[in-house]
Length: 207
Image (tube, rainbow, N blue to C red):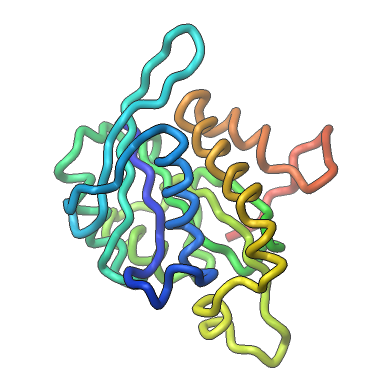
């Protein structure tokens, strides 16, 4: 089984915030593949289903949205890894999260590394006990110089960003599908590109 973790905060107050884009990507993926997120398991909203690839390939996928609040996301992830048939977290787990160091809507798949200042991912890495956890970062951009990053990620997207989100969420969900069906390396080659670059993979960013 592959396990996709969308990071965010529970509750209506946070639904439309930048910090919850991990939830929204995972929910978009779930809807595209008919996977209901109705089970209350592992301290989160959980669902499982299948993704179909080429040549009648059928792959089982679980999705989890931790309801523990962002800074304690690792508790739910650790519980899911213990309770599900996950053979290797470095291969079968992928975490989806927001990233202020990427321009709005930019995607970056990575096989591992540090948390890059993201407290939710930091807690996941701490509880899982390893850094080689694949992740999909969704760029939300940085605030103006005078703005506080914590306040910025807990604010809703700007109206023009919200209008652009449906297509961007679709691209992110397709990137997750590529990871599940084709593997991380192939998905990185396809989706780690700057807008308009059709020839070369975007450069790596140190974490």
